[in-house]
Image (cartoon, rainbow, N blue to C red):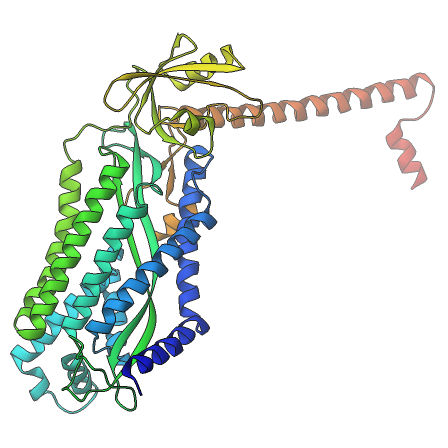
Length: 479
């Protein structure tokens, strides 16, 4: 039979198996959950959200499936020695790494650890000297792991991640309120996303399977090896914040560095397939280069002035809600509103008052990102957003800010990553209102008790004047 027909038939069966098992749907649910957390965080911070969780989930699932198709085609030429034991080792290593840092739950880190452990076992001769038993079996399984194949898949996934960050990172970036090191409130953007990637990958077949007219790069055992196709979903995710770069610039830079990192790891993995000592270099590089990406990202933020901070020279725009008057006017994040309907505005209260001056029309003077003045004007209609659909950079009157990136998982689940500011004017006003309400309730209770006592005294006096016994004595006579 034609080998291509065999491949297509096996791929079709693998796809059916992928969508009949729950793993891909669990991955989609996790994508929705991540999007839902972002929506809840936005509602905590400024009571609206840019995009709904359903839209974000669908767009990310569609993009992930498209990327998965491309990577699966690459997998036809690459292959990998994936076994159930290999996947079990990966999960164990990821679980251990998660104890130290949640962000260490990454295929590149796990594959790097397995590569180093494999090299350490070979250099020390543990595999040959270990007594028969569970430990010896574990060492034998570790020695059989296709580390270059795993690192190659990790490299490809990071290339895909970089592409998706460039594609969707800026558009779906979440505006945030942050508290700076000195307590100053700043606007920021969170570039984050989770994508489900369904993969079809060639793996060696122990029995049955099909032959290929070509030899895949990884996992082959001689020219007569037979192959099968393994279908499995992978979740890839990205998260970073910026206070000093425009979101589209941050997404472009982050995506490019991720693709360079993925390309470097994939190239080292290919080299390790032909020269085994390079496996250690690839394993170390998976750690060092990935940590280097984080260091470079933070260094680029250090020392730069924040772009989304109010300075009293106008009203800074943090974000623009889609399908609102502000988006129709062409507002961009980072622009500075100078005048509205002829009135100079320096804070959100003055902006709101200036907009109310002319209920049917608005004319706005705006300094764009380059500092050049432009004029925007538009008719206003009943029922439109009172701030035209603008999310303004935070001032001192903010109740919630986003928690730090080192916040616990419990805080992420309980408050969607938001942290309440106890000393904000809004919080103080709420506390004062609650205290005043409690005092008013106590005073009303005292007044009601005094009125009841006065009525009782009046009834007693009226009964005495009529020659009737007091109500208390009437009750005793009846009993």
